[in-house]
Length: 105
Image (tube, rainbow, N blue to C red; front, side, top):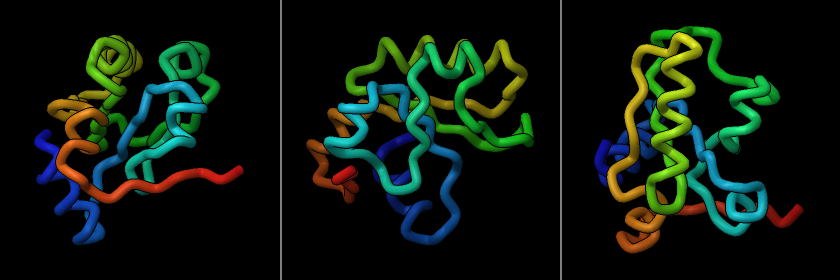
């Protein structure tokens, strides 16, 4: 999914589930509103709450791509059938100056 398309869906209140597989510290430094922080190891060990609906639209991202590709494959292995990658990942999102949130905790 293109970053602008995701930003539009979020703005319209119709976002897919955004799965951010970066580390907690990367996530806290800036993430897409509503994203679920789910590093690949947490998905593997099922330490993260994922949508119950295996047909739910999921968009997976990391900083540059490699971790997201692993996360997408793992989600597919777990039975999710509608999983896409965010084109350009967080690097592109930031470069396009799209809205981000930061965790101060």
